[in-house]
Image 1 (cartoon, rainbow, N blue to C red):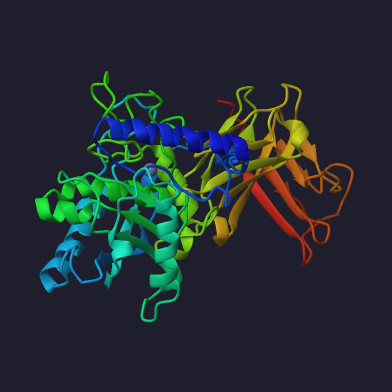
Image 2: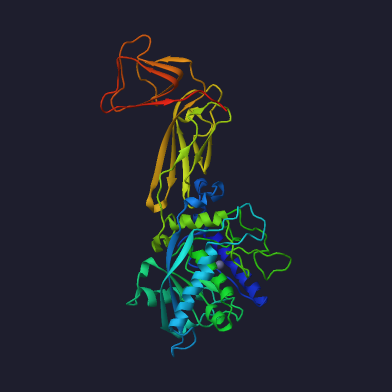
Length: 467
Ligand SMILES: [Zn+2]
């Protein structure tokens, strides 16, 4: 596990060196701190319920999640060497965030390269620039982190300790994603290098191109790098290095615009390219998954937008077609995981299903028959799970059922016509603490039928239909 990580680590270094040979650096060389979460651990956490590609996005159901960020601009010790602190420039940095970061996150481009992902224009992620800090520190000003790994990560950790953890007056220290903006490094065209603390980590990201972009009016190019580093902080891997998403580009060359032979190159945010303005369904789901606190600690920086909802499920009461019945979760959101189970499991081919929003339950065989309880659970990470149950009838039903006692498990009774008390008895009482359901086209509750306090009884009028 550790050795696999090192292999990827070394591979990234080779990639970085090859990039420098082409005389261009865009995007970040790698993320640091292998002790915190190994690549293999990441994979093991992504069990089948976390395979984002099985989830169809119902984008409109997801509220916008607002993530608090702060900018820390580092001058040299003499106070020069970065964007000067004045009202005009502070407004410029707010505008930069609004127009080049947020207005791209809610208006993402179509992927240049083939993908199985639908185009999701609005990621439902927005950043709130809380505070802009200006510091005089030549160590922080020097952002020439490329090919100095792990110098970039050590620099970021050091700056975080000095200017966040130990600095009085820094607001919302541990509920803000801190963006360190160096003054040295990057290219006049606005491209440069950056570093992120770790996947889904709230502490910091570091970028070295914004001052160059400010001087040369190339802020748009610098915004791609910042979106990329923010992507790491929100939980995204490079698309070419095992990102657990099969809808991101796999071509070993096209992720990097310095490599020949690809036209067009990728424009994915988590590749190296001049655009970095597209995300796939899997990537957007992954970000929301992290923001629900399932992994990392970036969820601490959420200001608002988490909306915990109970699943709303539509679907038939009968499962009598051999192809099964479809159930649709109508309010599934980005980043949640969904699990549907059926009891008793022996009635079904598969009684434990992940995915959504459409879930298909198939009878075990044409001979299967009986009442069943379907449970649909939606996971909201640290905010908990919500669920809803649905009572159904599987397979064929008798034409007439006379109910005198309640012995089924679960307590579900199905027929075309149900009589209770029926032939053979004069009184029937629903057992205490039991939840009894009749599923029938016609239900005759005759004199002598009782529902005592503490018991629950329900009739679902349902004609047999096996489309
Ligand atoms: Zn990167």
